[in-house]
Amino acid sequence: MSRLTHLDAAGAAHMVDVGGKAETARQAVATGRIAMSAAAATAIRDGTAAKGDVIATARIAGIMAAKRTHELIPLCHPLPLTRIALDVVPDDSGVTVTATVGLTGRTGVEMEAMTAVSVALLTLYDMVKSLDKGMAIQDIRLLSKTGGKSGDWRAG
Image (cartoon, rainbow, N blue to C red):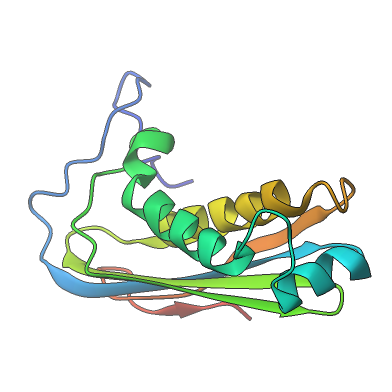
């Protein structure tokens, strides 16, 4: 079993020292979905939700969340992100969110991409919960990551 990088020799949690790592271009892409009733999906797609432009609000929430991941996930480094893009795509039964996050730095941006997706989906729930309280957030996952010591990775 490999050593856990966020625990010291005594088993105490600590932030990994990335100071000695080379700066490389890094990017992560994550996705997730919220399934909902046809009425809620239609309101989002048609822009008729009572709370306004649901898609734009979810996109902004995801961008803001990526920038603040280090405040939400213990031991994450604050990162100087250079790219955060969210695609928010409604269909007849829900919305799929895909986040692409990038930087040139010493550590990856997988957590930032997944946090962006998670918060965008939670925002969608909040904005149309009056139409469907039974919505289900599903399948948040990393699709790919590039750069860094471990190299490139893509979901199978």
